[in-house]
Length: 474
Image 1 (tube, one colour):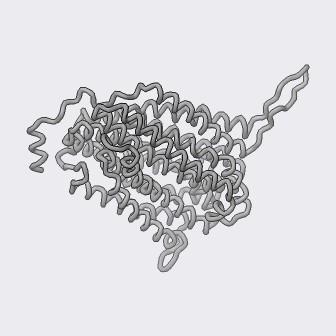
Image 2: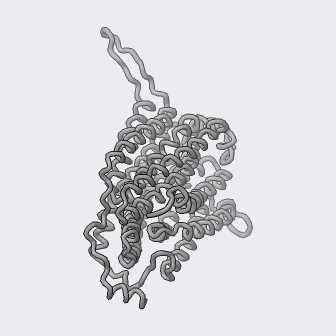
Image 3: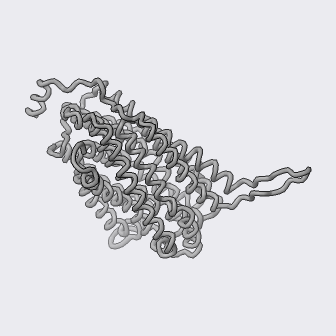
């Protein structure tokens, strides 16, 4: 990404990430499709669990952001040996953190479900699902660490092929475990979780084997797994704002899901389906943002910040054009889009309203995500974190409260007049749209300030010749 035409190089780096992220979304869409054949309660349960599980996975995404920033900048600077060390320390850190979070989640699983308002049959179905998903958490962390390591080095295709095989396995296994096809018992939401566990275990095992083998830009060396305090501190220093960023996003999603809960099962199910459709656009924008992160990191490592800026603007414009077209299609034909996942008329009707409010603004969601990717590639994870806070906690959650639950009154000559009655669940949908547009404007302004052009490896000395010789001997 440090030389040659930007568009073809960005496309070559981005398309495997786009496809890989779409395949990751297949996990969720396949679960929703087959769970929709069980009951609306099962759909509502999986819908509520999506933001809750993402609350934990966002920690892995924070570590991944740090890995991409460090590996890409070391590769851009020609220090491949230190990039390998970053990979090993990433694996070490993800193992420790994911095991601790999985144990924490299992211990407090009932309290968390009660906190977000799950009750009755929805609570039982949610519990069956989340217990197995927490067991799969270390596998998810390890695979994301593997993907970030290769991505920082410029290899986005290997992880994509593993995701293709893993998602295919999940799609095939889902109906057997969920509906009880063949000799398997019908396990409902628990079956969806076990299918996810099995497919992630396959992808993780293959990913670790690829890193140990090497030949894909970086290599995992067992002797590098010894704790390196300097690199661990740098990973945590760059990664913790990205993790907080993810927590802010996922916790906001939990809050928004809790806002939807009082409006009934149809609204909850429509929200779950709508969010999963949105997640398709997020995966596209997130993938382009990841490619942008790699391009920005490598160019800053190589000392070419102007090219890093050009990469960002090209990626942002291309992403927004694509997502605007997809959003327009969903607005034009919302009923068949929602009907793919559920047959309940109430859910379909509410899902159509959801899409008409939010789909026109998907391009702004995507543009912000790409610019955030540029900040992360520069190691400016605190800026990306601030943008997430503004988007969710300033421009979305308060607006949702105001529109969905608050009646605005104005006193006139001793008489109180209602001028802004709450509009119910549609106020929550409108809050998503407003937040997307407002945060995009802020992101563009912040990026144009140009205070992100210094990398995070300034002052680091390359590995010694002896270490390079030892790496060859390995």
